[in-house]
Length: 506
Ligand SMILES: Cc1cc2nc3c(=O)[nH]c(=O)nc-3n(C[C@H](O)[C@H](O)[C@H](O)COP(=O)(O)OP(=O)(O)OC[C@H]3O[C@@H](n4cnc5c(N)ncnc54)[C@H](O)[C@@H]3O)c2cc1C
Image (cartoon, rainbow, N blue to C red; front, side):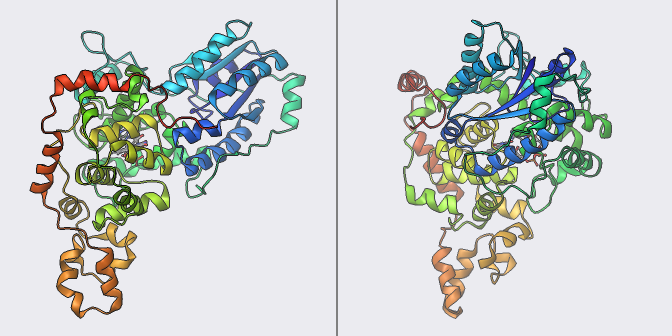
């Protein structure tokens, strides 16, 4: 008997672990482990948990058509998988387990630990690198190291990509059954998470809807992607991130479809198709970084010296940022989009992250954790990479003195205030011209306003953003930091940190 262990590869097509198990010619069964305590420590968003649960129910039906029963097990944490999986192997006489590798430190430890245990038994664990088009460690610089900067990584990645065939693997043929799998197929295992859930129903989970979203995007929208992708009021991006995050679709499927509609995208270095491909490369870049630099998974900044920055621990300001009540409309509209839908446009993620770190001087890790707890597309590598980039502490860091001015960003990327109006209904009486910075208008008009207007001013008392003073304060926060000397200090401070995210509680 073969066993497929599903984790973040919740699909039938282009799933090498499933495919390899099926070509063996033996009966196949599958398992999924819910690990609520572990997920809590990783800050998994209830909306993503709901998406995973809904996707599993579909996957279970799809697998049944291939004669493969999907079992569901709920244990507290990764470490509790070991005894359960060993017991499963004994009970069903499993000779081989197939799975797709994850690259975060806890996930690597999980897999190494079970591999060690299984090596004492007759069951073999087969791990496949299939989360990325190119496995971490396979795109390296002249010295054989993982690139620390995106642009040369992308150049090398594209060169490799031109040389390979990216055709995805199809769905496997139905496998033969035996009395065990037949009995399991007759009694479908219920899949019910203990983890808190939040309704994700606006994101369809059946294969055909997800593939259709990819096809429609590549056919009708990708050409305009380079010019429209930065405007949050326009649905110009693919919105495939939740599916890529849980593996309901693979990067290879995305690239293969893109090549059908934009065959030149690998050769040209501009145009919608090429720019969208670059986003898929960003995704891979951060996966490679997480795999190559495990200290990233332990809560550390990539640039070690920046760990000596003194952050502002202002809980009240953080609360206002989380709730979308900072007084800066573009920031607040974005945070309300996140809180309500579990998704946020990329341009807005950069704006709100810059605001939290560079304007409020709050630790980027607070923002990283909050995002994770809300995002339906939460992915450790992309989220951590995005936050470290925004905070100027990561790979390819933007210089620390570069600060997004939220009002200038708002005027540029939401010029007719459509996005702001959609999320900030309380500002509907503010004239369009004043909407990017309503406090000025409110100050002028407050005396003529009815009570509701006066309430507005108490809620919208954001100060006029002054890029110069902000830049000065960011530089001040870094002033006196001797990068080389502090590098060692920062490393020493981090000795002993083990898990990335929050410690597991009882
Ligand atoms: C502070 C911050 C936090 C972020 N957190 C996450 C996260 O938890 N999960 C996540 O998937 N993305 C994250 N991103 C990256 C990006 O914002 C989202 O991937 C994107 O907005 C998803 O929308 P889309 O599917 O329409 O993207 P598209 O523009 O259609 O891009 C296609 C795909 O490429 C990948 N991608 C695009 N941009 C990036 C990027 N900058 N880094 C890595 N991958 C990228 C995603 O898988 C995305 O689905 C974050 C960015 C920032 C600045």
